Image 1: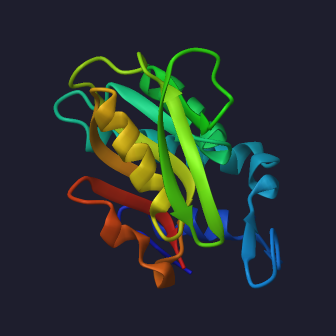
Image 2: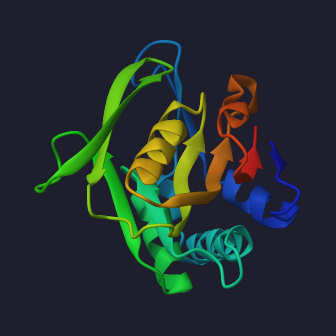
Length: 186
């Protein structure tokens, strides 16, 4: 594993030491990246939160981003503390059927199936610069769907931040012109 140039190798190496590969989950041929050991290590998790907040400061124009979006579910664990550190709103993007009010929805393909994401239709103010946060960038389908929801809701995607990028799946090329940062690139 190598770190994104902006991340700093020491933090990437520390975080990589907490990632556990689980073969054949959720189905044969998939290697699931279990991050629960990282969330159980407060000092490492705090450093990860600071890294995501720094990405948010760099991604936005002027004072940084105006909101952080976290994609269900591990994107919530990474995005919410980053939003708090940045003192901006946190906006959850959830799986379909989980939000109680009017929503925008976007369907997309996964490396092992299809899914639909949703966000409250009133979640974004027009032109709000948004950082999209998730745990893993694989094929890019989830991030692209989240980006489409932000745009349809009136926000402006100014950056993406991922804990781990699986470069062999080439998801980064699907993200468009917004800056994308990954703490670990494997």
